[in-house]
Image (cartoon, rainbow, N blue to C red):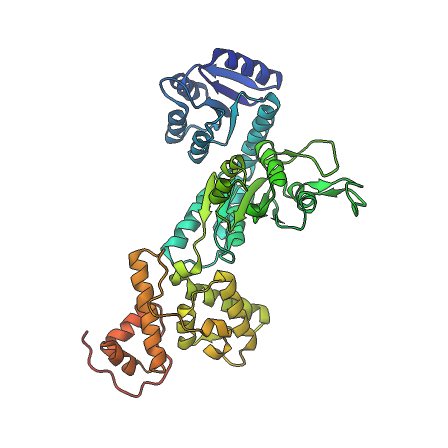
Length: 463
């Protein structure tokens, strides 16, 4: 059976034109003159796809879209919006729309969007069970902090859609790991995950990497080569450092995101591919748009679902779980039992600001595992920069108050223990605490206290 497409628009001339074209393309087409009539038609007859005008008298497109989701109606929705109303279209995408087109609508572009959306719908039906199995078995890096748990939850919800995902964050925070998680939890999990670095020496090199080239397209192009987006067909293309692309490449990327179509470098034939795009950058794209170095329309296309990965200094609760996970991983790769982290080593890890984020932590742990000759990872195995003292009271201003207080407690107690050379009784005296209460704090804050000399007995059990 042909797919059923419902056109909801208050412009009768446009409705007639779209109905005629959809019928010519082989679809079963129906129409509704406003939002209420469109919802009634959906409830009565259903549809695979709705072409929905946003600006209608009475019940507007955004209200219709919300009702579609609230009532559990099943169609994919492509919204139609007047030129200059891109912000409204982005709001619709965040509300569950599959795509958007601006008016006046280019019919070939419309056809490409309709075909792509319906193809995704068919693919989602076939692979949903597989996606559920893969999603349930996916391992992710441990996240103890509320901030990172929120990011992972948002990523899981975004994965179930086909929307473009933009991942932002400093270098080394794990943007690629998050992109891989989005792919693994998506209906495209059985397809390839293809990495593309958008930073290169020239436009031609990046464009060739993305879209491929024909023989003779440039010096050294001795044979035809498929691009990375072709290799990602049925899966996900991860465009890393997209904020570093040049204006020329941004134009080509925008066309590809809108249509799924491209041409190889040096080629004249238009090719199509169905792949999900996840992009990442460590730049502030809104600031780049304001400066004129990044296209506003491309930013709108990318900024459908934005996931910000916080730097490690904003989530100190994740430091030790991540470190222990890396210890297990590198010990397993070396074929040896996993050594334990000494308490003094954990305190050093918690005292570091980690300007290189998770990547720096991973490298520091790998160094310790490689150099360790026994069963304990001691502080002398850490890189020198990790052992540099953090100025007292240097707590990230971005932290919520509760997290900042916790971070201050950890850093302050860790320094007291270092000064007392691990002796908990002397550290407790310096802090004005009873030793039993300090031990309780150490456990609560994730600072293990089993190491270090402590010849003095505990001084009572009260607080």
